[in-house]
Amino acid sequence: MKKTLKIIAVVMMILLVVSCTAGVNQMENKPDKDHKVAGFWRGLWNGFIILFSFIISLFNDNVTIYEVHNNGALYNLGFLLGIMLFFGGSGGGAASRKRR
Image (tube, rainbow, N blue to C red; front, side, top):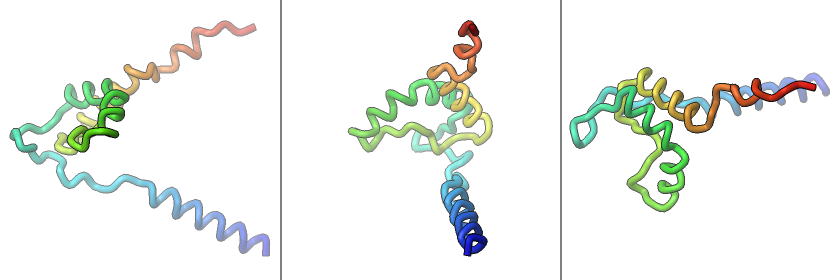
């Protein structure tokens, strides 16, 4: 009985993790209405202003936090770096504390 419950729990965890994975971006490398594709610098900016974009997106359907018309990996890298710059995700704050 315990073995069956463990197997069910593992299967449920696997299904949970798999169901949360991102799908393919159908708009990658396709220009938007202004005939532009977001690259690294746009990703960096969008990552840096993510908190403000999120708050505005709650009240305005025309504002999003992620540009789907992007060039792929470079945009994603810029987006991630922008988030890290804004939120200080390098871990430097943890290293600056003195140990006793």
